[in-house]
Image (cartoon, rainbow, N blue to C red):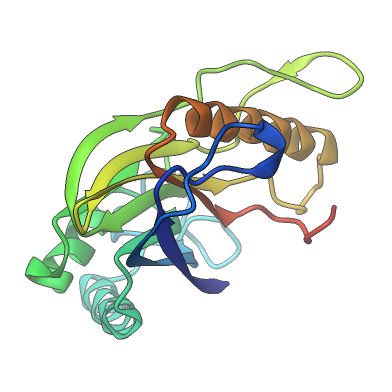
Length: 220
C-alpha cells in the first residue's frame, strides 16, 4: 500500500482538541510525505533458517535482490517526497542498498530493527538535517480488558529540520489482521495517539506527522 500526502507548514500547528494557542501565520512551505508497505523486502541471507516456498522469510538471489532494489529506487525517485516512511524492510543491508540506489537525493536513511531473525521493520528516508531519533517499542502498553503488550514493530520517532523548519515524523506499522489480535492493535493505536499528541504539545513550533501501515480502516 502506497500513500502520498502534502503538508503545509504553519507556525504552531495544533490539533484543535489540545486547546493550545496556534498562530495563523502560514510559512508557505510544503513538505511532501509518502508511506509505503514494501511487501516483504528481504535481503539474500536466510536468517531464520527457513526460507522455502511455504515459509514466511524469503532469501532472494543476489541478482534478484539487486533488481528489486533498482525497481524500488525508481519508484521512490518518481514520488519526489521529502520524507519516505517505509514498512516491511528486513535489515540494515536492505536499507543501505536502497540508500545507495537513491544516492545523494536523501541525507537520511534509517531502519528501526527489532533484531529478530527474518523480521520486517519500519524505516525512514528523508531530506533535511537529522536532529534526533527515538523509539517506543520497549514501552509496556495497556491492553483493553487488562494485561500488557508492546508495539508489534518499533514506533519510530524522527526529529528533522526540513526546508529550514522543524518536523517530527512517526513511522508506524501496527498489528496485522493475519491471525488477528484486535486488542493489541487498539493498544498500539491508543499509545501512539498519546505519544503523538504529547509531542505536539512539547514541540508547538514543529509539524508533527504520524504515517505508516496501521492495518485498519479510517474510523475504526
